[in-house]
Structures are given as structure tokens and as C-alpha cells.
Image 1 (cartoon, one colour):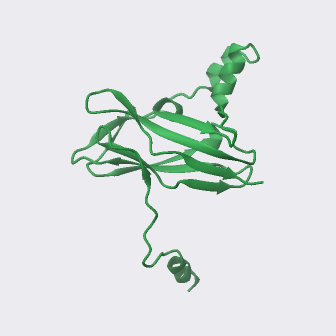
Image 2 (cartoon, rainbow, N blue to C red; image 1 turned 30 degrees about the vertical axis):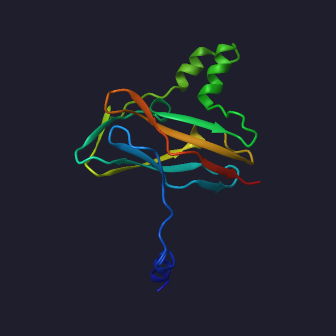
Image 3 (tube, rainbow, N blue to C red; image 1 turned 180 degrees about the vertical axis):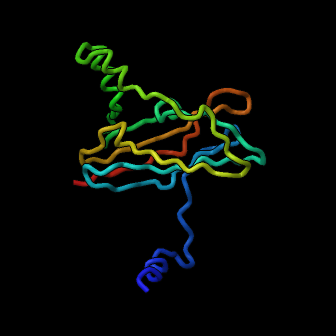
Amino acid sequence: MTVILALIAGLNFGQKAPPLKCSNVQGGLKLCAESSSLVVSPGKNVVLKYVLKNTTNKPVTIKSGTLESLYAINVTNSRGEQVDSFNQTLGKNASESRASMEEYVRSLPINSGPAEVSIGAGKELNLEFNLSQYYNLSKPDTYQISIGRKVNDNRGRQVILLPGAVTVRVTS
């Protein structure tokens, strides 16, 4: 009985899900953020979910790789200040001789996954990004996070699918 009530409680009878924030279509693809805002407690992971949609009637092949190599990411705090990723901070420290270059190179990801992924005609690829692995978002503040996927348009030029910023509030 409890399981059935939990399932019913999770349904929104007569209510539509809020529309996803989506980028324009480029190269047959569009990137959609599953939410426009998120509230987390300090020390909890900041996980953002996206959907990469193939809007064509044929499969689209995309490059596979790391978050930092295939996505344009911008994180700012409530004062509009840029929040550097852990790798950006370590790279700056290495260039200023506050950390060794070897330490910086060791921190860079090794991409051992498949080089390409195919998204079927009209299909979607669900994406989940744990930004806490890349950025220090543990301090109470309100962050604006933009994640855009780098793809090639129909003419082979690199463009960025950018669905708009997600507001993340880390509570105190």
C-alpha cells in the first residue's frame, strides 16, 4: 500500500512538467537543461542534468570526451566574479611557481572512453554533470552556471549549444 501511495504522490495529475530550457538547434542537435534552478546544502554535490536531443531523422555522431574538453562552462558567484575550476586554479599556481607543472599535468583527465557516440534519429542522450568534482561550490552563495556543448554546425564550424544559465543556491 505504501509503495502505491508513493507512486501516486509522485504523479502530477493534469499538470504539465515545466518546459526545459533549450539551446537553438545546430548540426541537428539541441541541448536542454532539465531545470533552471537548484538549491543544495553546503558540502553536497552540485549535479546538473541535461538532455542532448537529435532533432533529425538520421543518427548524429558526436565526439566523446571530458567535461572540460567538450563543454564551454562559465560559473560566477552572486557578485558576478568568475569561479575558477580546480584545474584552472592549479594551472595558475603552476604558472606562478606555487605548484609544480608535474602536479598540474597529473591532474588533467585521461580520456580512455570511446572517441565518438551516435545518437539515433529523434533520440536523446541524458547527461549528468557533478560540478563539485570540478569547482568549489561548497560556500553558501548563489551561483550562475552556464554549460554549453561544443558541436559542429551544418557547415563544419564549431558552435556552442547554450540553453541558458542555471541558478544554483548553496544554503547556509
